[in-house]
Amino acid sequence: MMNSARLGWFTASTWRGAVALRYPLSLVAVKKHPYPRKQRLSGRLAFAAVYGAAAKQSRGALAIYLKPNELPHSRWGLSVSRRVGTAVMRNRVKRMLRESIRLLHEELPGGYDCVVVVRPHEPLALAEYQSLVKLLVGKGHKHWTAK
Image 1: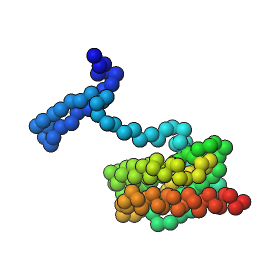
Image 2: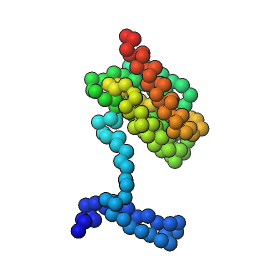
Image 3: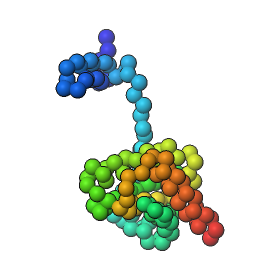
Image 4: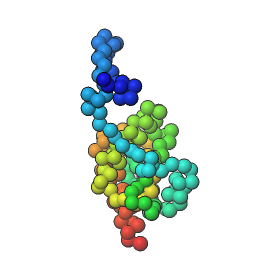
C-alpha cells in the first residue's frame, strides 16, 4: 500500500475540470530542476559586495557583475527591476534566466559570485538568454584570470 500523504498526488484535468485523473507521483515522470540554496546569492550585503568588485560585463538585455569567491561552485543572484514590465513579465524573465543557468551549469566556470541585472527589453527565447549568459560570464572570467 502506498502512502499518499508521503508521496503526494498529481492531478491531470481538462479545461473546466470535466475529467480529472489522479495519479500517485511515483507513477508520473517528474523531472526535478534543482537550484539549491548553496547556488543562490542572497542578502543586500552579498549583492553589494559583487557590485563593489566593479567587474561588469554587459550586452543587450543583460548585465552581469562577477566577483571571485572561495567556493568550488558559483552563486547566482538576479536583479529584475519594475522597469522590465509587469510582475508576470518579470517572473517569466527570472524563470528563463534560472533555467538558462541550470542548463549551462556544467559549461560555466565555477568559483564566482554573479549578479545578473536585467534591463527593459522584449522577451527573448531561452536559447538567446543562454547565449547571453554564456558570453558575458566568459568575458568576466577572462577579466579575472587576466589579473
